[in-house]
Image 1: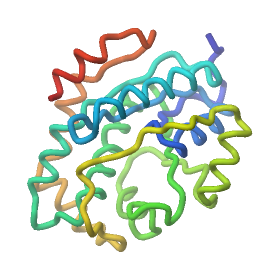
Image 2: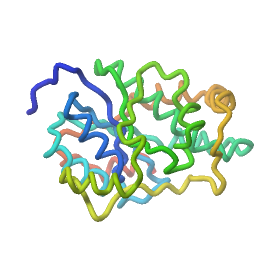
Image 3: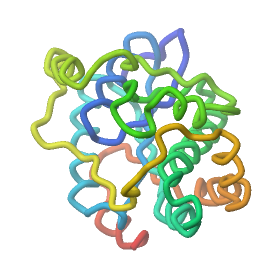
Image 4: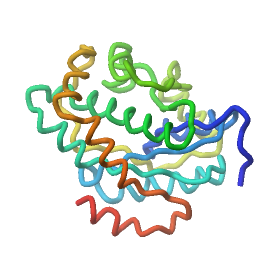
Amino acid sequence: MKEKNPQGKIVCLVSGGIDSPVACTLMARKFEILPLHFCLYPYTCEETFFVAMGILNDLRKKVKFEKVVVFPWPRILKTILADREHRNYACLACRKGMFLAAELLCAREGASGIVTGESLGQKATQTLPNLGATSRGIKFPILRPLLSLDKLEIERLSKKLGIWHEVHAGCCYATPRYPRTRADPGVVDEMLDELHIGDAVTKEFENVLEVRTFKEDFKNYLETLA
């Protein structure tokens, strides 16, 4: 197992897509890595989760982290989607909720920061106003090593680092048709408060799955979420 890095530990949000494994690998040069994966099932297909676990298992051979923390996210996402008045804010509320979950994990594990694979303008949540809205008030620094790179640059970097996969996870059935691109931070915070997302995240944090061998019973885990 990799020795602890003197720079400390950071929590890396890893979806199983192209970007977040690259961000995780880059930050592993300076920090001890703790990947955090949000399981969206049944708001995504079973295969997506298994693809993500396969990518993380391969990533461990490169980065040598101790474990992956899988956070059950469907009940929180269901609560967010119930607010139809702010449907176009759903992705932003979801993203900030994930940062709240990462805060809890940082506090529990003694980590000093949060890493994402966000790239400026690549998705609706990744416009500059929306990055500000989802980051506001988060207690730990959010590090975005890929922020200024475009998709082709990130793909090339993934291949150069030796972590490229032809098949990636990443689909979500809950994405609104017209997501907000210039969010009012106050609306995002009000949504989280009115829906009690902070309390829901704290409650669901008790049900996280720690993956250490990648031989865990993932099928049964998904059944408990469905």
